[in-house]
Length: 498
Image (cartoon, helix red, strand yellow):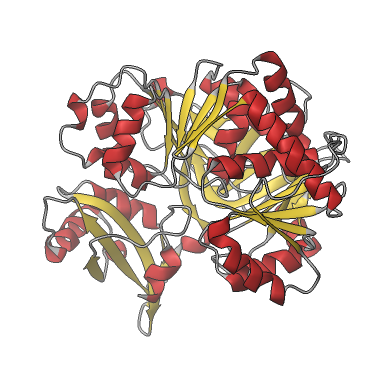
């Protein structure tokens, strides 16, 4: 694995193959040499505004060429990125600016008004730069940082409270990128389509791995028009399509998808949320020549495990084994390795673990625990897993998602798996809501495939046939679409309040 920092990755790619196209977006494209020069110019401009080594710089962009320039320019300036979702509201943006102690905020013109409103309420002065080409320095950007320097303060979604800034070094982030490149077998010939925002870790690492592997990244602003995405897959000869379950479910809903010739597509990856088994089967049928990787990760280390494609048919509900260079295991309540099949907390060790939550030592201590060496810490995922007799890992539930009904613990995933087996069910999410008699009542929220009507009573009867009585939903609610967070994940908090 290379010891280059993230900023050095771009310089190395530009030196090795300057005319190769690095990034393609709806507004145009950039070669590696052009991206490198643009990053240098903006880095020099940021330095001229007072941005110094290890300062934090917030980024607010839609997926665009400008966004990629800004990301690498911040690293060239020796600073750390704090990427925000392009639809973030001014109040949350102001909180992040203050919490991170950001020195500057770089945004596109479309988000300049939000940026200005947020800066007015930030506790410390923040310089706003609108556009990646709007400032220029004296032509001599600062030297690249070293691998142990801060590279990012990346904020979690904050679904259970104020968002927390995950502090990551260049060494943390390059280790993950190298591990992903290794198990996905990425190379210079790859062309990766990214429809997730670059503010989302899954989206950001599409850029980092492409630059580190000298591949080509094709950016789309989102997945609103599935037909356009299929056209991009064809026209851009995409080799790799990363997605979350929503992306794949919408894609599979297109009529005649299996008849579309996509001879270049060789890799599909899923992360962000478990891929329902029926969706995995449909993907395998629709793209029989593509390898499907099922993966699991957290912002605090980005990637934890992956299921090799040759195991998808045999273990379609598993998220696999630890990524190269790391370890992951299931631990019981006494701190011992859990028995095969027993449910416990997933623990992780490796060079990808965050340094901590920015400015939150107590939260850091709860997440990062003493490791087997005096200098090492291990990470408690907070998620419940089990492993099979061959060591493959299975996500059971987020600890916060466990429902306590009638004095019993209910795992939403078990009910969701049953609902996904019903004809016409596209999505299912089970949550607990306060109930005077039950403690929490089990409520299932379901969205149908486009050509189906669902009967809530029939779905309850299916659950009653397959599950213990305390797990049967008290209510099944049919939606056209289930609510999503900005990163495309199911918004369970919204469902609990609906």
